[in-house]
Length: 139
Image (cartoon, rainbow, N blue to C red; front, side, top):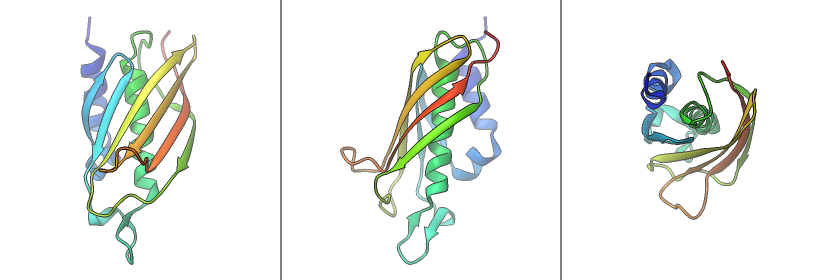
């Protein structure tokens, strides 16, 4: 049997936008994932402030949630986003890495439910949170 965490890691590392954003999968397994996105001036949304664009944060949250689903013991295969709600709490601090953590907390026959948080160095003040529903393929 193929290790799902290995497949999830290979899948994420092959996604072109994940490579362009510099996303690195730092933890995966048992329905949990963690991805880091280093600060990159190419991702700045507001040149006056140096703040990373919210779209980059959104992509990190979505990718991390998908990885959490793929690594869940009850998920047999790939996944796709059905719905993802993102609440932006504050601007990420320029120059800091953004770390996203996601947990797949419930799976039905067809849908997986996930929560995620994106943080910079201020771990007690999230940059953004997300909750979403993802497909469960091949069950």
